[in-house]
Amino acid sequence: MSTVSKSLATRILWGLIIGVVAAIVTLGVGEFHPGTLSAAQRVSSAVFDPFGQIFLRMLFFVVIPLVFASLASGVAQLGRLDRLGPLAWRTFALFAANMLIGVALGLLMMNLLQPGHHLAPAAKDLLMQQYGGNAQQAVERSQAQPGMTLATLVDMFMPRNLLGAFVGNNRNALGDVLPLIVFAILVGAAATQLDEAKRLKLQSALDLISDVMTGIVGFALKLAPYAVPAMIYSVIVKVGPGILLTLSVFVIGCTLALALQLFGTMSMWLRVFTKRSPLTYFRQIRPLLVTAFSTSSSSASLPASLALARDELKLAPSTAGFVLPLGATMNMSGTALFEGCVVLFVAQTFGVELSLSQQFVLMLLSVLSAVAVAGIPGGSLPLIAGLLATFGVPPEGIGIVLGVDRILDMLRTTVNVGSDIVSATVVDAQVRKIIPLGEENVSVSGD
Image 1 (cartoon, helix red, strand yellow):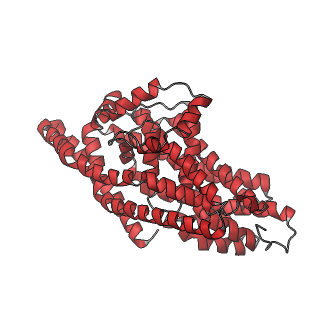
Image 2: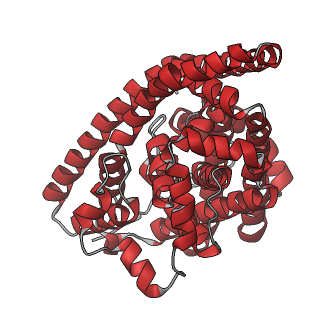
């Protein structure tokens, strides 16, 4: 994360604090002078809510092109799928396992703690009213949904009208992101079958679209230090301080799930696939984890990861050189965990109950979206909004968690980087069993 990004994140955090304090003061004054509270609620509806919507809808604008371009480019850059060697396949399999387990832990934590259910029924009704009835419609749609069958899954992921599915037929609602994800994967996979020149040309075009959309996200984030306090102030003065308890439980749940992923899942990989002691190992990589936490950037931590792998962990240069750079853009177990937690938490807050089969689909989509937005500061916000819309949850609900995103961003980046270095260690141990020591510089792909 650049210095500008650090400054922006600090301003957003301070904005959150100011908004919360101002709202609590307003509620306190309202106890003695109800007219003041009524006036604050009217100002919130007339001024703060529309201003917050400008910020949110700039994010919603980029959902469709960002999902498509990022995911299709990510698949296309793999090159010829049939030419990937044992090192690559082991790496991708471990990345997928990391992210799936991470999301599963996050969803399990959210189901156990149920942070969205800590909101009083009256406060939940007020929150629904704030979003113009969209939340109530979402609840009714979720209750009316048929059971999950094979035919239902096919229709969800592969509708007859692809364009109509992800564009949507309502200017006030996001389209369905599921078919778009499938289409993006198919485009990326087909691109790997093109000759090298054509594949690189297509990948360059997709990367250009992704960069432009990222620029729009950057514009939106410049409004965040002002939009976040406006939105949190509006929610608290309308709903009451109960939303703060709900948000606190959510943050605690996310933190616990991230800690389990880093120190639980990663320790399991070390025990099962290597001969290293997890306790000793985490002492060795502690400087790297501190770097990741302080920078909130997998890319900024990459030089430290490579140096640690070479000097301290003694990993094969070819393995570390392949796994770590790829992991910095693809192995986002902390991000995937966070996305699953946010969607389930916001759904609970609005009273939208996701079934076990829906949560399984959410787990898969969180993995794909985490890969799609890898390396894009703030890029997960549009994707999370798209996931919320996919499951019938008002995407504006993401505004509830924006203020605490800074600390959770630092934590999930630490998990992402820790997962990368452990994955490199595991893959190195496995590859050494099939490639004799001294031949580790063999190419990972061949003609």
